Amino acid sequence: MSLPLEGLTAIVTGAGRGLGRAEALELARLGAAVVVNDYGKPGRDGSGEASATPAEEVAAEIRAAGGTAVAHTGDVADHQQARELAELAIAEFGKLDVLVNNAGILRDRMVFSMTEEEWDSVIRVHLKGHFNTTHFAAAHWRERAKASGAPVYGRIVNTSSEAFLAGSAGQPNYAAAKGGIVGLTTSTALALAKYGVTANAICPRARTRMTEDVFQGFERPDAGLDPLAPEHVAPLVGYLASPAAEHVNGQLLVVHGGMVAVVERPRVAAKFDSKQDTFTYDELDALLTPHYAERPAGETFAAAEVLGLKRG
Image (cartoon, rainbow, N blue to C red; front, side, top):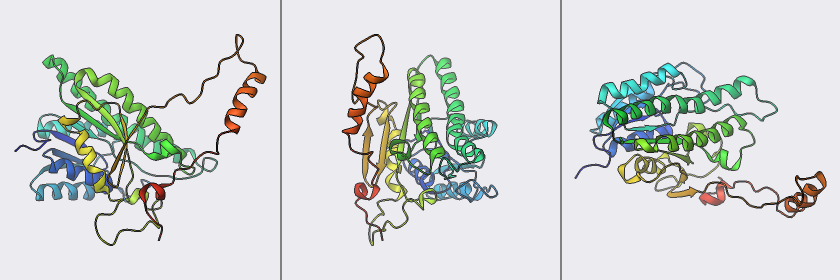
């Protein structure tokens, strides 16, 4: 019996640790040849010296389990290095079929304290990094489709966050980047559908180096898999990368702890029409002020309630 991703080539960025590692292992388990990308800097803020070790260790782990993998240690936020990543996949395995964008860093700060460099660095790694790899993968698929005169196989899985969905007071750069990734994903989905390519985004929740502060105090179970383990996220990535997901395109899905939620596009909650050519201040005051005054204060996202976890 063939595996669902047998014969396919996948790139996973940020795959040296955490979510990316779990995703790379899952894609390999499902039969894909995997290019494991990780810049290898030790700090979750992108600090420290780059290292080949994280990517090479995960690639070696895949090969030890009987899979096929090579390591790439470049910075996907650098346009040329992202090009080299795509070229490596094509040179090693003949083509590229799946792109999973996961690489990211954190530089948390309240908006009134954030520096320009803290803003730029997070936008660069998350949003530009997603664009760079998507650009070269999309160009490869378009070229192949035009040469064959028929659609090709292509899957993109991007990593957004619930920080975009629900807000995150100390992460304006991160939340903005993750919102931008959703916009990039939906635009890409529309642009590449005619070539046979799908693009989707996930909002994963997992205990990793990136989220060690967020989930500090949430108990790990004495037995069984941690509800916050990255291994809960990886199967959805494997599915979205597979032929079975050919009709899933331009979607945003939240995933954690054995749960997948499909997020709807924003809907109009209320609509008001002016009684003359254009609104006046007084008319808007009469319509909008009561509307918002009658609504409860803004709800905050309660991770503990959704996950059923308790702080230690």
